Amino acid sequence: MKTSTSRRSVKMGDQIMREIATMLIEEIGDPRLEMVSISGVRMNKDNKIAEVMFTMAGDKDKIAAAVKALDKAKGFMRSKLSKRIRTRQIPELRFVHDNFLEEMVYGSSTERDMSDS
Image 1 (cartoon, rainbow, N blue to C red):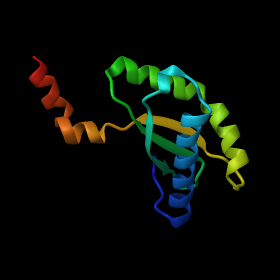
Image 2: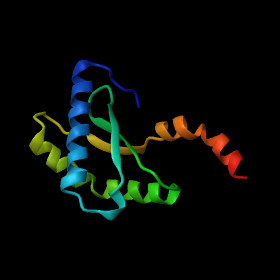
Image 3: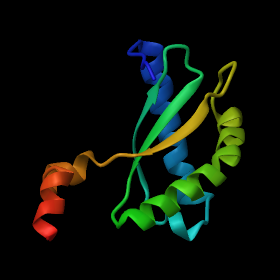
Image 4: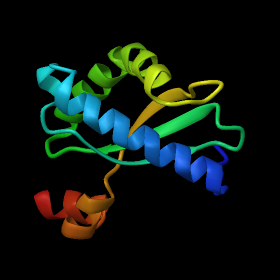
């Protein structure tokens, strides 16, 4: 996905990030999403796709369960975003686990795998 760095795309991404984070805290009661925090949103060139990055502590199974829960709540989030954001079209939401902080703390994933053996 080619991302956009235009002022409009960055502003829309920031607004989507704030709104989704608020929804996770106040409106979505899925227990698989309790420790999920939104770390950023990247918009594609034509603002039709929003790649929502999230962080979460846990193993691969917990992260996979969180991705499933986020995908399940995707339609609800888009409908809420359409009421809160003034734009012609609400972008498609794609959720991606952001492991940047984990790599900063623990090193790269290959180093972590080697130390476990």
